[in-house]
Each structure stands twice: as C-alpha cells, then as structure tokens.
Length: 303
Image (cartoon, rainbow, N blue to C red):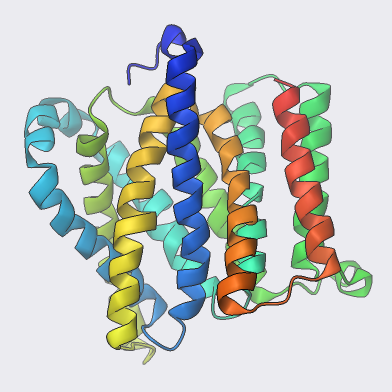
C-alpha cells in the first residue's frame, strides 16, 4: 500500500495484484450486463444514486474504524478525494448507464478497452511519462479497434462520423475513469477501505443533483422488483468488491500497469452478453476485440 518500488516488484505482491485486478474486471464485465438489464427497470441516474447509497450502508458497517483511524490524513486531502470520486464514480457511472439505453453490452465492454489508452496518453501529456515505439503502435492499434466498434464496422459511417450516441457516451465515460485511475497515484497513504469510503460518499453526494435533474425532466423511474435486485447486485460486485480490489491492485503495481487489466473487461463482457443476453457477436466485434487486446499487449511489451 505504500507505493514503494520494492512493493511493485515483489513476485508475490504482483500475483496478488493480478488476482485482485482480474476479480475487478470480472465484476466490471458483469456491470455491462447489469446496465442492459436495468433498462426499463430503473432510470439510469437513479440507479447511480441508489447504487452508492447501498455501498454507503456496507461501508458504515465495515469501514467505520478505518475511516476513524485514517481521518487525520483523509481530511487534509478531502477536496481532492471528493473531486476524483465525483469524476471516477459518479461521472463514469452516469454516462455508463445512460449509454446502455442506446448501445449493446458487447459494445460497452469492448469500448472500455479505451481506458488504458487514455491513461497512457494522459500520463504522457501531464507527467511526460515516456512512450516507446511499441506503446505508440499499441495505442494506435487499440484506437483502430475502438473506432471499429463505434462505427459498427461500417466504413460509410466512419467517413461520415456518424457514431452511435451510446458509444460516444461510453468513450467520454472511459476518459473520466482514466482520469480517476491516473489521479490515484496521488492518493494519500491510507487504508483501501478508508479511501474508498470517502470516494463512495463523494459519489453518493454528487449523484443527488443528477437525480433531481432526472426528476425535473420527467425521466425518473422508480425501481421495479427486478430493478432493486439489479441495484443490490451492482452495489455488491462492480461497486464494492471491484473498487476495493482495484484500489489495492493499483497500490501494488501502479496505475499504468493496473490499467492494462481493464482489457479483460471486453472479454468478460462479450462472453456474458452473448451467453446471458443473447446479443449477436459479429465479425467486426471479433476484429475490434483482437485489435484492442493486441494493442494493449504491444503497449505492455513496450514497458
């Protein structure tokens, strides 16, 4: 958790990080399915608020001692933590669930492969982190894969820049989560539970104005029974378990290497979407998935 170079290089620590980050991406793959199932069962911004309200209940039971112990450090970084919680948790999830209304779970999963690209580019722009030849080629390969999905594999759509609305929302969401991932390198030296409690509180607080806007626009839909089941599932898996695993994984191997694991999400999401939702997996999806994963492999090799 101290972010020291030795903790990043220890073999046992690396194995633990790989397990944590694989669990994270498995849960996020499930989230793509949950987002599609939630359409018609609960309005998207209400889903975001109730998701984090449920997480706050978990944290009240499980993290009180961690927050109390870490509070002297947490309070000195409170504005920063509230900001990244709003960006990475509220902003990302609001766009994620809105996107689910106009795109498929397969597309949502594959497009999340853009997150490591955004992390790499942002790290270069903000911190002048060196980018090697293989990394540059990997970035371009991944971008081609993402554009293939966003254009539906249609060259005419690509040339006319007529992309699916939901796919564009997902790309913006991916940029927000990449920003959050990069910001985690500046997190205070506190426990994962203490840090997550503040981030989750920020997410809940900043989601409330979005719900108010949803109500004002007449878009509010109270959860059905299925909606409540999905909210509970989302709170436990992608919200609570995944975020704790992700924070710990980043602490062990750093945001750059941790970001690479996000590319397991397209694999899990695609499999789940085909098996559980019966969504079609077309040739251009396979082509795009190969490009996204191949691009990330090249980027990682470049390190």
